[in-house]
Length: 169
Length: 139
Image 1: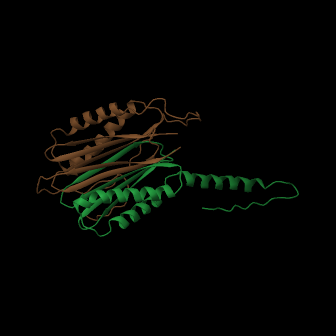
Image 2 (image 1 turned 90 degrees about the horizontal axis):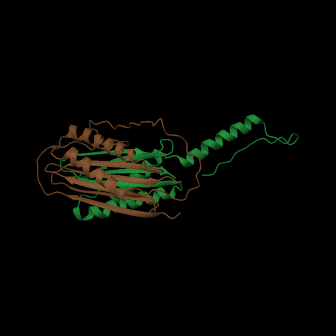
Image 3 (image 1 turned 45 degrees about the vertical axis):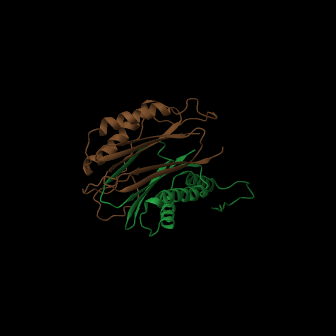
């Protein structure tokens, strides 16, 4: 099975200057570098009681492809509904990222795409005139694996959400 | 990694003692699972080395950020593929200028908890924050 690198660079360049204070980035797991940070890394795992061991099927590829258009629509809808008139606030945005992640994950799970694992990434940031670059690269099988991404911006914040779909061989 | 396993072979009976066989089997199980699970410390070290090599003490420059993110991500992926594990990897890198602005990041996954894992490293210098997330999904 051939595996190639796939690049997805994204740029968020804002010119508006707003002298407000922000808060630290919050992560799912990893080393805490900043001693002044008050946010605790949360690593919550939910076990799915309906998950069972799948026996060998000897199937070469997915019967149903990853539905990019449907997921793109889900992302647009959820992000716009949650963030349309919201001001950036450190505590509120922290919960909002988690809420958005959970909501998008449950909607993608409802689609019941067989043999696909998903990874959902959500970034919400304040618009303060800073420069920023988000990029991502993957080592996967480009025939079956893919990603869907959506960005949103309002007066005080921006949001970038990505859903990766990885085929389980 | 090479492992050497010793077992006593009884030439008269033509068998190994059963306790030794059971011990060997469980040892083999451990080694096999080491090869197929996501080890966070190993990946974390790779990420930190990549960032320090590529960015080091450089100041944030808008024209160079694109090149930095590409290099960091590429370095990480090359080192991760050298681990020779049956994994698909997703590497995500954010470089943000230090400006007093806030950033929140979250991720959720729908995968197999026993074999898949993720590792996120936050790194900073005087002028920028760098956040790198690596997700490893077993084939």
